[in-house]
Image 1 (cartoon, rainbow, N blue to C red):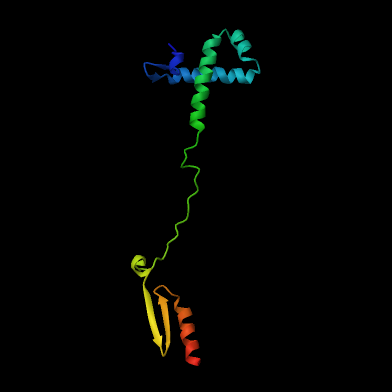
Image 2: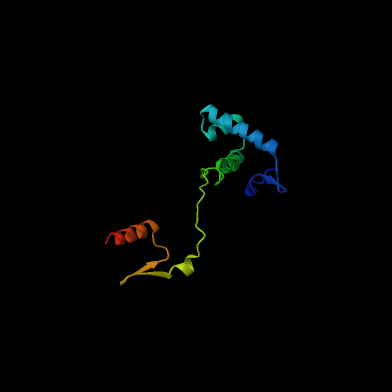
Length: 126
């Protein structure tokens, strides 16, 4: 017996044969083009039971159609990052000092080597 308040479950179990039977009836009603009330009258069906099963099966179909959240996500390519083996916390405030004649350079530990090379080469010319 159908328990409409419990989503078509009887003793906690779904009756798949009954679901298939009612889905076929609902499909026939849709194909007929008749209103639900007229179809039930012509087929001598209990209108309340028809509406109940239509609601139950419609909810179950919506749940089946809901995509798994992970299915819609595109896979991201793996990108390897090269991270230098530097202790940034201790090097952050570190300063190197170079003295050339009377000129003093204070250079942070993370200074660009090519820029430093250019500076030193320009000093050689003077």
